[in-house]
Image (tube, rainbow, N blue to C red; front, side, top):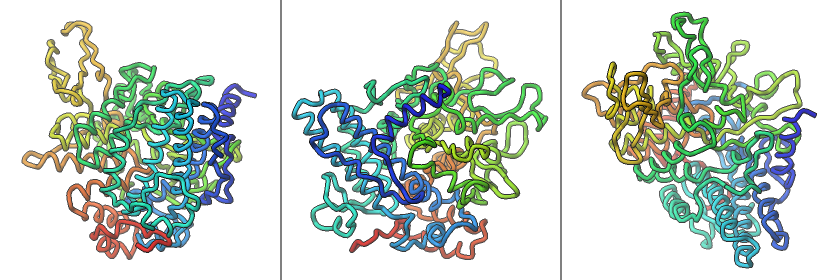
Length: 576
């Protein structure tokens, strides 16, 4: 058996086989209980088995996550294969019996987190977990539970906040009794922020029981990133400096790779190969379309390479030998699945309209990046690039959650709102060095760096021969910028325009092009529309998707979404 296969099987045995998830189809999440009787929490190994089990069960929520966060927004559309309930989601006419918007799988997992947290506390009190072991494990599961609450509240508007395990979590109506506080979106963010800021441990695991390297495969990727999630919560509350600080910490984290590349969105050191997820053209052949090289989508194909480590924070892996089955082939594949979803016409037009540095039109992240045309049909390929039709049963894959490109964009949003427009402009476009430099300069002492206090301090100096300070290599000297690494022209702010608002529009539109279909779009639209007090920010983008998709309901949907109360889903069986 090949070493890689043996290695992956060993990891997935540890991660998933502890609590096998059985499911009748890709959206039925009716797993065997991962709640472990209290007497089974005897030692740290039992605690870690519970953690592995809860993340194993989380894998079953991937279809819900993508459908709720992408189909409800403006970048993903349904195909003719989609059923009536998916059409409901797409047109914002969801009924309470819609299986795709059922909150029960989230609440079940929240309930199991509550049970694990209770047992961790008992173990700590009885000295079966050391203080350090408890702090790391409690903080991880508390963060995962907070993320699940967050996912629910951005779609339902208000939900019960349940922090103790209950007997019948499937009785949704009972959750709305006076026992549990019902928190709206703002209240929930406040509550989660208090809990998260008080966590005793905010870093990634450092315990070898949970973070292992097996033949080069690192299990640390499967666990939620607390600092990035804290950045998101602070961004919602307009705590911009604090949000930027959490994101900057993640962007400058030591991941045991080259510090100049780690999470820096770096450019390639070799223009002939354009590695590091860069896209562009061979050197001296910039005007030849046939010399184009698109390495940007490689981040979704490969794993366990140095470039992979430099991009990804949170990725959950599916393996063909273990349940749950990779759901993305069924959702997206035109030839091997049901092909329920496709890119919206509006995002495809947007990608095609981008201008490259050589004047050519098109975005490497569009066609052949995030999707591919197959027999005249656009197939979303981010999630299924590794699927081989010649090996139809080997359906391994990845669920993408946090990566460097997304963290940079969230940082830009915070920095721009915090008045650091040039910093945001540089990171979204072609990097710090270019925008803070001076052509022909020999003294870099005060150039190619922001000269701002943390978290807005960036040093991108790279002193060449004849330049001073001699040997200067700033931490950010390889930063290419979000658009720079895919060879696009800068997005400009017209003279006389409000740079804050124009840049924020650019940042959110760029997030659509960079992160399409990865599950971030709905929260972006809701956050900006709520911050501005302008529901049309959300309504107009969804209208454009439907209008360009040929839906007669486009105008009616826009009118409906101009009332923020209509952004949120009906909660089944509740008396709301």
